[in-house]
Image 1 (cartoon, rainbow, N blue to C red):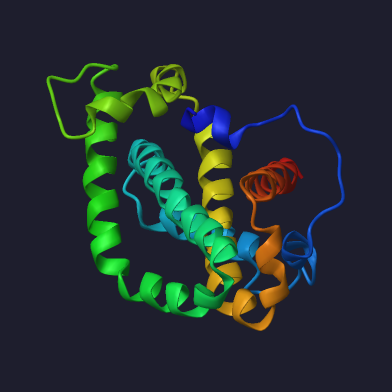
Image 2 (image 1 turned 45 degrees about the vertical axis):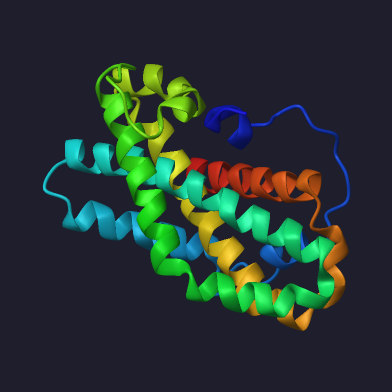
Length: 203
């Protein structure tokens, strides 16, 4: 599934939120809420970048990075659901493997970014088979659609902070949630966060 379609899955039935998703919407005013952290990250980017063009390019890169990273979070949740007796060791190992995981994701991100900035052309790299996953970003890059990437950047940052909170802080104390970590419910959770971020940004 392409990055854009995976993030913006609009056609879905309204249904009750699983408990793990409800946690995202509780106490939204706290300073360490995932959306608050995402907004803080965006403001820091604006303050430290030398130009809006630099902000734009960084957001493109980070959207790709965060989307790739999210697949690792998802796989961890799915594996923990299938092996509940191993959930805590899986989380511990996931945390220990962070440096190697980020190195691999950074390499893939660079390859995809080069593909995007070259207008969808690639002379050959280790990520060629997956360039189609990001190709739908091309029109938005070519149009210089700043607001699109701003919303997507903040949304993906919120997803990353929410996933980290869910995995490291909440799941160990709520092992009963494991049965809800299905592909459908986790994707729905991601979409809820994207929708939430869009509404907040529109205010």
